[in-house]
Image 1 (cartoon, helix red, strand yellow):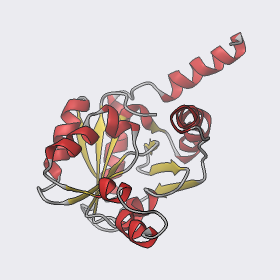
Image 2 (image 1 turned 60 degrees about the vertical axis):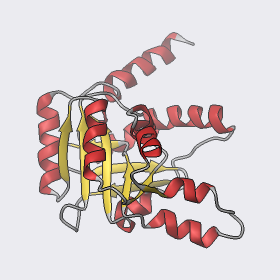
Image 3 (image 1 turned 90 degrees about the vertical axis):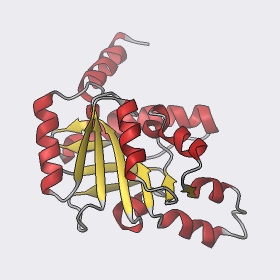
Image 4 (image 1 turned 180 degrees about the horizontal axis):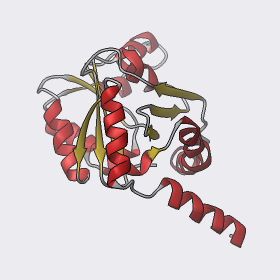
Length: 215
């Protein structure tokens, strides 16, 4: 690795992988609330997991998007082993993608609860998520009954311009390398969702975690 590349990587890490200070978190949380998005603070991943599970009534239909945040926080594992909820993911993976494609699409598009994360939260109260396939973006935007997003405060940025820089300059290279190692394919910033305001009160909840989670 060249000195120039290492310097660039160090700069990106300082900019996009460092937890936000309290003043910045407070500004982002207040802006989200003003935009109709509920905010709950969590000290760490373990507390976030308890908060998320406490928000979902037993027996609810739940879909958890592919998320490093959900996996590293233990939320995905707890959902799978608890047996308290009707999980959409296992149902989809058990279905035939050729003969049941329409049913798979409907199941994934409108769950009672959609869990996931985003790649940036702006201090002005916007949520920004990028995706290669876009499968989680529809439920985030309008399809799901309730949306719960778990977000480490290292993802807080000043504005939408910085949010896009975080996605293209920092998140994408990491996700592309992960996808190639895990699946043998490259990822892509193919679709981007920007949520500036929630139309339906209490539909979307962001759990802001004082721990670096996900990309």
